[in-house]
Image (cartoon, rainbow, N blue to C red):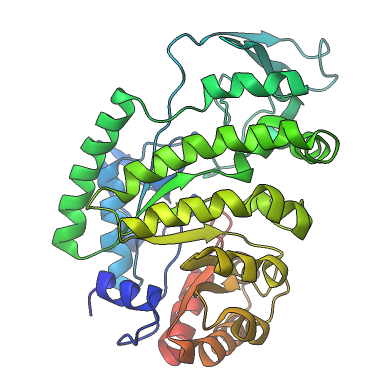
Length: 410
């Protein structure tokens, strides 16, 4: 079977020639024998273009590098997936001004980056600490305040939404893809589809932020308190986010080059939300997004790394086809529990963790892989995947141990 045939079969619960292994790269330090150079720059660390609209990379990484990564992983037996990040738009009237406050003025330890937006619904101010240089391979902080970026949360001084009155302005900052964004997406997919068809690899489009956007916009505590104290206002925020998510998902799912759409849900888990709040603010929109994907004959995947034993069944109820992830380390979710709860309802990815690979303990890695393959493999709905990505601190020796164990138990 090709990578695409194998993964499509597993997404649908059909038998494959063997249990697939995938991974996501988030600055993985590739071994010398798998590296390449482009335009005179060695690709010492590997990434994925799912990151391109929400992170700043420390080295060049092009679409051709994504293609080369697919081919390199194939050499060692890994089934890679091509990622496309679906764009969104600002309303045309939006303007902004950037500034830098010196250390001591707004924060005692760090300078503070500020971006002040002017929108039709009023101004918004977004301020974060400028924290300095990161170790090699890790994503870097840009010289401005991006609206959406995971590392904004620990760096936050003032999120864009710091008052209920700010919610209406989000319509101008997270809007459906305009004509320019749609043209960009069409061009990107034309190039991706050509390679994917030739090399028989699947394509997944990242098209929905959901609760992740709410946390990015209001901060972790701010989002939770807004939901508890101003539920009507928070519902309005989620409706604004859903409108853009639906438009992005429609754009992605309607394209013949996309096999699956993916929704981020790292910040939608029980680390942040009770099951009741999940049902109130996430579940209704999720069912609409799944319906869009299924109407176009595409699969729908959801990312959740913790709280899966509680919220995983609700994802299945919503019609989600693929769950990233089942994690025996961070979520302490046994593969037996995952199988009993979800094994016949959706495809599960995971079974081991990047921390296990980082440990340098081949016996630990082997045991996690053995249990995952033996318990979840018979469902025909399991993909072995180190949760949630391999990072700059993931050693090649850990990946080799993963490969050796997978080849034995797949």
